[in-house]
Length: 274
Image 1 (cartoon, rainbow, N blue to C red):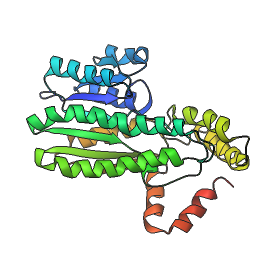
Image 2: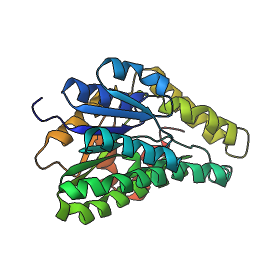
Image 3: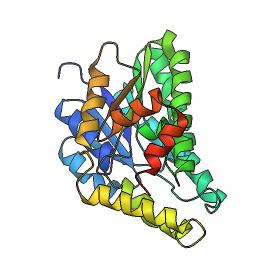
């Protein structure tokens, strides 16, 4: 590639992050994948990329990562905020400490990294911020209140950021994946049962647990490469869309949410867990 972009992508040790890093490396970009589990990114190094250890909750890690890339490359063209996870469990039974960490990872860590990258993009009057949200940023499901709260917040935060950065020629893009075959299901499944599987909501928890397990075990989910391709589209577009939705059930769910009432959407969602 004659003019490769310098890309920083968080959560690159698995799932959407790793698939995107590989996609962009194949296209000839300079890719820095960051995650806590640096040992899980050796394949990115072998593919010609860079792997840095970073905990999105540690200020010193975030600063060191940005400094290292700027010192090595002189710029960051694309920031892909992908790191995140899901806390599932009832509102009543989920400890506030767990809910707070959900926001720290999915919103505040992401926001701090963005703050540190933006001055370099502003100086060059060029750049792309790509935030990995979810259809969960527009819809809702039972037991996912804290997760959905972070993704709804990310949608609004990204929209505001897009307006603020327009004069500096920096694009802000939201990616809304549907059901994707990643570690997402494993990370949310057992903790949900541990939090809420034995109390007054156990019937609902057991029903949702079965639906979740069936969805991931029966290959109902789309591969992460589906999202990697959408991210690539956004990076290469002269005027990218503000949102890209892709993956299993993404567009149907967004359509129902947009054009039908809350009560109809409630029934549609609950019909899957009753």
